[in-house]
Image (cartoon, rainbow, N blue to C red; front, side):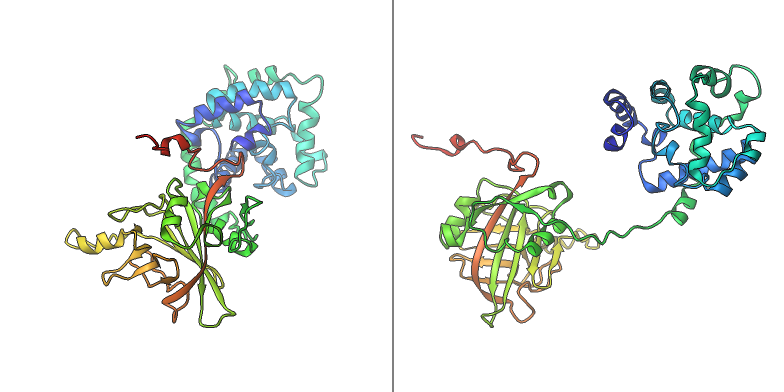
Length: 408
């Protein structure tokens, strides 16, 4: 919303509008496609009631369509009024909200006389708004006089013609169903842009763009604009859980990539897990519902954790097992659990052997394959997430002095 408004308003007006919108967003702007269509339908209604002849002309030339009303509801009159007049209007808009938009836009329709409606050749929406601009941008047009006589007159029939805020709100709500029935449904089929990574480090498993494209689809929205930064690799830091924990103990939000060696040496499966907390040896299970399991390549799939609302208070044991998100012991680490002691994904102490079973809460398949519940482990890599904007870790900077316990 801020980006859209900055294209047509000074920063001070954007700030003031957003501040006012905190209390009641719908009173100022249509903030989604459904709202936008409902506002346009409401505008149709009042133009038809107040200016029936102009309504017919606008319908014929295409100005009375959602796209045809862009100069009003998407461009804030920037193409229809002089710059100083737009700022003047914005002062009113900050006080009156959508009521001001409807009042001004309806008054502009009334600028064209019946004779002009008959004689001007309106071929499309642009020609309609060009006829309006020929009046509003002329040197003789006074915006203040227009406000006094047409938009906010003190006396006369015009004072009763414009809809009040309460009527507008009611009409917009009434037209929401029409909006849902008529607005287009967009399905974005654009492949996601792969996550970037910090260069200069010997990454292996995250190197393929397909792996990083899948990861960015599965991450929480707040973490999508990030890059991968390698913090642990069996190729460089040793193959042991102690090394794994040492490298990961200060970092939340990590992605663990594991190379599962299948029976055929030519086929390797990249599987893994996203941890919402740091990996530390812990006496109990921990983490939260942001954790997820995945297979990155081939046949990429993600298995997010889901709560079970059907179980009652008597099913405490099942709920405790379901909430074993992260398990970190000296002997193994795992994510997800079952009553029989198996896990959604588990690695042994030497990071040589792994296993994957369907786990309560995650509803995952055996990640390495249906016939590969146990597998040998190849390369293991752990990545932290750093922001694209400033290159800093999403968990903030770590003060090494806090961890230096020498002399204590």
